[in-house]
Picture 1 (cartoon, each protein chain N blue to C red):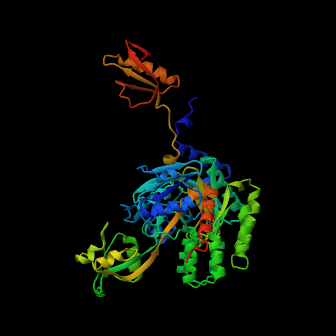
Picture 2 (cartoon, rainbow over the protein chains, first blue to last red; picture 1 turned 45 degrees about the vertical axis):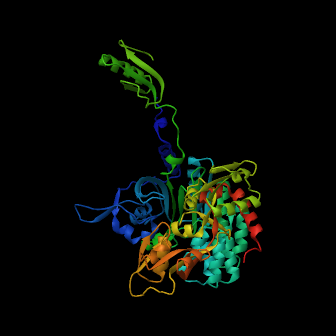
Length: 371
Length: 210
């Protein structure tokens, strides 16, 4: 039987593997329409990575619609998890600017959402599935994890207004300890709090190495509760056997008005950007008037084809050249025989050098012979 | 192997000498040649010279694991990179400057000539001042002299160029110096190497900061 899998591009193979993985854990596929009412994005602009959206007017209703730049918002809006816990996954195209460019592109996005009562098991399952998703793409992968409760807890001690706290979160996100020191001194943040923020920004490493240092840093601050939660998550994650890929890294940030608790980003070798991003987003659900939890992640597959290129040795098995007077029914019969034997055949008049082939054959005198 | 993007020119040479003094030398780089890429397997480094404004692009896209870029360019282009260390070299300041002894009127739109439109916009937005940006690519100083703009926003190192052109700084916006930047993904995969370099930098400058 023909192995159709071989025909797939790398990113298509990843999508299949991820679907299989998500279904294995009972996540149901959620298929959506390509369009969404623009108002949804207008009201939740900062949840999106970019505010550039393709819009158009629905000719039947006159409503302003948008090509989806995001999936999570639609899943939440459409009421998933209203009655009970919901586990869904999706593979959809989204339309938004590509990294480093203003041009809007069609990007394949795959991800899952757990909406409902998010307990320790749910958090660990989602993190474990995120790690396994990365492993699907590459054996050399790292997942950075942060807990927003720890960051906001420590920032609470600065007594600064939200705008200035946001500036500090940006400095933590760029690991600029020198800028944090300068900013805290300009804003008269107590020196012990400033040192804690600097230390938090610089921390990076495995849970085993870094968790005790986090404990020392948050001691006596409002972040202690979140630290306890992080310790519980680590203890539970140990059972999944996936902790060697995890790195604690508080430079991972997301919009605090939507996200809370655990957030994470995944990286694979040879791709200089994160290809997976996720976390708890209870705050987003609250904006929709829902008093429940949610955690999920998305895998961005648009970069994979550029960086993980699969170089094909051949375009076709056989390049078959025929001349002008060739009897066409006989040629078609030979081509049919060759393709039936499982080989790929490209038939053309001349070899212009544009096709890589295993064998070149010539159809001449009613027969196929080697060139 | 650490791939390091350095800015071509005087600042790059100064920065290379810092790397060299920390044990990351690559003798070939000092040779009389026009090569742009230099590798030293023994010290585990590969340097390449890039246009200063392109260094952050090489780092953001992971071709370079780390690099050195001026704070002015980082503020202007906001690349998604880690800014790990202030090297305290290439020090200067970004200032608003104009013709000596004159101050533009407050009741008109201020015409500002600059190479740094984003920094300029951000600064004047905070002042709640309406401005018109005139983006230039060099010789900014002549803009107010020829009446093209009311003021300029540019880098001031010693102030000599301003003085010689009958200009003066009106207001300093921000202090600038060279920063060590790192790609966010490569920082994770080459964490040991990058942190080793960083701690050597911290040790070598400890106590030197003023």
